[in-house]
Length: 168
Length: 168
DNA sequence: ACAGCCATGTAACTTGTTACATGATTTT
DNA sequence: AAAATCATGTAACAAGTTACATGGCTGT
Image (cartoon, rainbow over all chains, first blue to last red):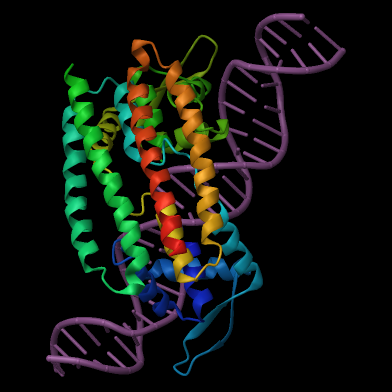
């Protein structure tokens, strides 16, 4: 969603080199968002091009150290304060369902079943993950997981409701 | 999220020309997702390049008529049946909040307040919209809106919970 | 005549993403 | 020595998005 801004966040914390950012990112998202290493470098190139980060020097092992610029900080604050919108179609499933309606899709029930299946899997996975969040530095992640689990609960109920409605 | 597939859906229904697709799209999403006319044409070019649509002829007013190919239909069915994933970071706000945590953002409360504000606005807007969905052909949209409203309710409550938690 | 919508398109750019290449260092 | 991980990068593409140009048609 915004690899770019997450890298800015990590660099803001302290100057880092490319690989360190990859590791930092994965820690931050608890491996829930796999990131191709290459993407770190392409994104860093673009950040540097836009003067949001700089590379004033290297570390002892000659790895390029990225630091955030003042423009970079501004961009980061701006992004953080910008509310996210597009309530209805933020969730792609709504959009898919609308398209299915448009084409009078005959397989809506299977579609819903598939969606529910992955959501139930996610529910279990995130529940597991939440259990592991016991230290204070995991407090935020735990809050997010709680939010996500509430979402999933609601979604699954809504999908059940949809099925009832489809059969009527 | 997938303009491409929505255009396929509209073309599947019946052959259409570019502008008709723009109008169709906007009707479909009830204007909730503004679409630049140009995007229709760039997307159509790419669909044609990938042999998902064809332009076998023109209509009376010499407008290119797009029709869906069998490959296009397959692609559409595939997309419809593919469940959407990435539960946690599907919602960009979660990700933002994580980044805010990473940088020890001091303005979390404002961030949350801003987010809540737009969500409340959305809530009102979508509630209005839902009231207008009275005809049978609006049945699906009404269901989506109900889902989205449940989501918004849950989100707003969660945001309130976050604020409490931040102050503790 | 003029405003406004109908209609089509292009050039340029952003972000995300992958596949692949390459070599160093560390662990087993 | 072989395997794994550390580490950096490039080329290419997908999808979204915008600004802009252009001209026709329609109603007032």
